[in-house]
Length: 438
Image 1 (cartoon, rainbow, N blue to C red):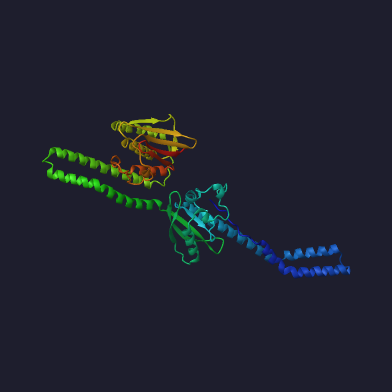
Image 2: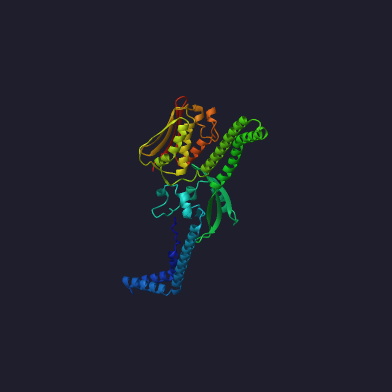
């Protein structure tokens, strides 16, 4: 998570050069004199070399001011490097304390620092071996484009860098994926401790859930208003009829009351299904992490559904080995999905027919299957069965709310599973959920 600090060169070589350069004429003159004395025979070759070396050393040793300058320069650079390290460490501490995903980049879009929240949100989706080393450090040159693929973010960064304003730039980006995620991004300038330029701080606030809630609320109100209109109108009509003529015909009043109860139950069921669908859609992007035993879930719902099957004169059976079928999931969601599929198979089957439930597995998957030998569904309808409020054009199927399979679809999507539907008219239908095995 930490970037190695790029140290500033002390340039000691250039300082030494500055010290020696003024002495070059004197040293050169000494070499010429010693060479002349050598030619005249006053000095031997080795004596001349000795005098040159001793004189040069003494000459440089006398440059105490230059040596002090060099020492001062070194101390200044060390102090500057220490200040940079301390400043960067303080910045790391501040960024790590921010709850939202936060990333610091330089002028070239290279990532310098990011906090744990950013690591979990953006880096965890990438093969860590190819991005981070064993010490969790950012490799040199890793750019923000590698982690966050947003054209709008990059264009805004470039415009912000070229502008002179110091205010925080706010934008909203959408990152595509299995589920699109939206973020509000605050971009601000941060002084660079080592150079006369700026770094840029990016703070991300996820707005996926907020936007989804607003969209779902709007859709919920529209759908609920449309679907509840019919039963409420019927209830109102029956109530008005009973108010006017209820005392005149007791038998007719009983029929009206039965219809009133039926429509009330229909309205209640519709509201419950709308709430279940709303909850399923709101949590679709939250991956469940609990360990769930599918056999235990099925055992818990089977007895209650068996009573419904007996009432409808349907033979309900289950076929599975007595063992644990473990997945990562939400037990309540899985129970809702199981109940919806089994209830549909029982309610829409022909009297005297059967419904068989299976759980089995292969090397990587666990399959939950509900199979009936009922009237079947025409292939034209199969692709649309999971749409909201979609009902097959048949009187027996218009008794439902048209939301059950839509709820199942959202639950299946949240669990990264697959829903498979097979049906043939006059033969029966099969609904399967294919889970990933732990």
